[in-house]
Length: 195
Image (cartoon, rainbow, N blue to C red; front, side):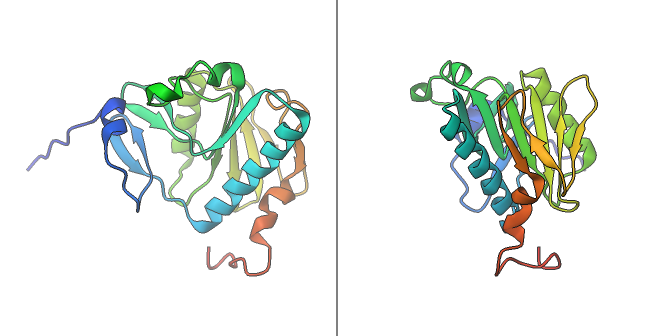
């Protein structure tokens, strides 16, 4: 027996009732559950906090947000864990009109979840780059590393002893990679076996 599942559009996704137990992306018209764990959330908030602090201190014309939706086509929506986007681009989106921006952020930051595969991350990068993203960060708590991927050039890989730089997309931003993952070492944080 063959079952045909009807695919939905971004507009239909916007009209759907929120499900308090799940967060979804829309990929080729199909809902994909975003399986964020508490560890994933701590790393996401830490990255957002570090970048937001720098942007505010330096008064950079950048919007920083978490889990903001970006339309990648008629039937694909992505919600990067953290996004950094120039104000001039964000201001082109009318929040009052509803819906999501119809472009990708300048920097899309993905915190690796248990369900993420290398091929899925490559696909996300291709979608982001095709829609205007300049850099995609991949933060992985396993090796405690951050990869910065840009179109057409080799990846920059920052390990646990390295200092990450967000140049040129986030002018002047640097931080120790260890500082990103320090939230996993605070008292009361789960051990690797618990995460």
